[in-house]
Figure (cartoon, rainbow, N blue to C red):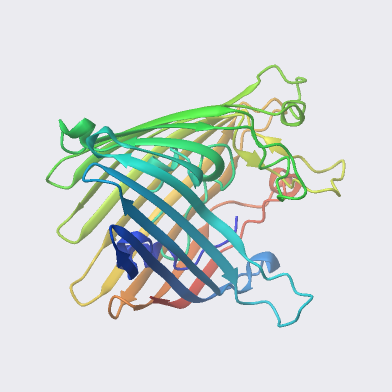
Length: 372
């Protein structure tokens, strides 16, 4: 998965979305905001695919229109462009759309939106996706309803219709996304119809707990990857999380299991007989993170994560990921910050890592972020 230097740090600083946005239009109940960040990032590793420039521009728009005091229309669009490409008309540097959805909020009855949005499994996973230089290493993008996903309808309700403060829940449906060269969707990122649900409860003292469950149909080409010929049409997952945020501290832990959902190996055209790839029958995922925010801007952090594949039909039972990350960020003000992170990979190269194209190696991430 692509290293995403500073993405989480920017969110920590000013919530690089609507919360940290600059208002550029406000008239007759119509509001338009712009937000973004310029990231100068570099990472160092002996692994050539994760070594070098990782600078990018991320920006977007968010808007609201007030129909009345209860009904509000809203929309959001977020885009990212890499800054490491050369200039030239033949260079494909159009970037990628991260989010894009529109919806309506009906007061205490909640909101409903459609488009490209976060899957509800990420409602739990986002609690540990806060390390400045890394994050999101277990819940993959465009992997059913794990992370950012397309063709989703999401209903969200805060404070249980206004009756219970801190009790939120969400319901989600995803339409089928077939393999499509025009959209860039591959066998790894395709999905059948699916649904998900999440809930969280936060206390006034900073403690909170959350849970999520998703279940999706797999397309036929994904099912036939199973060594037993494919006897399970569905991919599903559940996760639980707890966190504490207060007095400068942030501590969070998540645990989850996926079934026929977590991808591994190299999904490419030049597969050799020695390679293995597909979706593991069962994966157990653990993430732990602790941070402390000093008054003068320093925010050290430490985290641990592992994803272990169990009961694979091929006979493998190995860690897909296992690492410790230590680092720190320094926030000069609401617009500028720096960070350094060191990820210590705890995996050892063996026949499984070679066959599944896993390259264990330590990585150092450095850089600076300007938020506007």
